[in-house]
Amino acid sequence: MKTGERHIRKVLIANRGEIAVRVMRTCKELGISTVAVFSDVDRRLLHVLMADEAYPLGGTTPAQSYLDQEKLLTIARQAGADAIHPGYGFLAENASFAKRVEEAGLRFIGPGSGAISLIGDKTEARKIARKLGIPTIAGAVDPISSEEHGLRLGSEIGFPILLKAAAGGGGKGMRVVSSATEFPSAFRAAQSEARTAFGDDRVYIEKFLEAPRHIEMQILADQFGNIIYLGERECSIQRRHQKVVEESPSTAVDETLREALGSAAVALARAAGYTNAGTMEFLVDQQGKFYFLEVNARLQVEHPVTEAITGCDLVKEQIHIAEGERLSIKQRNVHRRGHAIECRICAEDPENNFLPSTGTLARYEPPAGRIRVENGFRQGDEVTVFYDSLLSKVISWAPSRSEAIASMQRALSEFVIEGVKSTIPFCQFVLGHPSFQSGDINTRFVDNHYASRQQGRSAENERAAAILATILAHNQQTTPIVSSYNGVTKRSAKWKSLRKETLRS
Image (cartoon, rainbow, N blue to C red; front, side, top):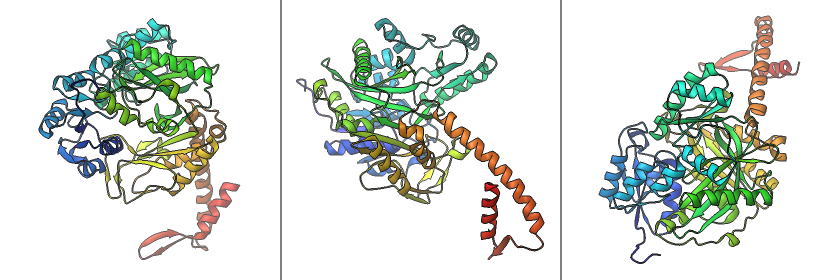
């Protein structure tokens, strides 16, 4: 530790849900006091109960609560915190917030404001990558200045294109645009979503690749110029450009490609003067050629899979780096073993285009055994429309990929959630699909396998319903199919058998 530096004693976590809980756990292990903040609808969540102190932000929307920089800094001063951990999303990649934290004499547990401005901004990161000779996807270097400007760029690059938020990630503010006629509405929607999620409505354009793999590389960098990469994560299973199932290592990455991706990630971090934890994201095409995508200048949702295969606590490293310490591990000491998989359990309805599902968690029973579960909710909590739909993350580890899949399948079969729809059935579908089990996946997995399955099921149900209506009408006078008991209508066993016969015919 540098002379005169002191250990962090109290951390305000400027976030909510499972990531706030995860950061608090490591803080407690290090003997660091924790401060939670909460909006009006989050006052009963787990992170509020776990913290040593908790303060209300008020409001319900992100802008009224977790994006309000002045409120967060005021609470940090009132609580006597000497550091702020931003988690991910919200203000985690906001350079102005990081600078205000620094100017207030607090530690920002993440990259410095200068590095966020230089490389956390997606457009600036692309400029650096191009200067370094790292392959990038065709697209605009600067944010779109107007609708007309975007249309002109889109036509030059060639549709389909991808609109992306310049100041954030996680699929927020991202839209695929197939033609010029779709551009105006997509541009406005992307701007609006980026503004709501990150307080910054800048978006940029890049060429849309049809079926690549989404591979990212985890790095750690201290204040002494030591930078290491810990290994890749496969993040190709996505819906609406948001990851749902992640794993490490990737079945598409051999040691040669891993070293190339790691070297590119380290070069990017060094060029930007980057410190703390970060993730460099890449797309890998079907020929194995990689393209730099963006930098996530923060902790990632899927960081536990890297922790599982390396044994490295990334939050602990983040805190030590913020305290001015050197990395506790060198590149030659990074050893990856086994295979890890993470499933994001979101309050969404997979049968209805993954629309958010709200309500009270009437039953919420996470799995146990040889499994890691990161929860942000408990039984009885209310799931609202105001924030991200992530309820929990389940992480499995095993010596082999097939064993990790089996462990995850077992865990998901035990996970009970009632009161809202969840993505558990979708995750189970992914894990059981032959393409996933063989490792033959890309970012089109949902469109190619799950969406077509849903369309087939819809058509099947419509056909079954039409046939059943005919049968029921014919038998209405002689065979009671529907009965009532205590005022509650129920269908008889014969209805179930009729439906099975209909679907077989």
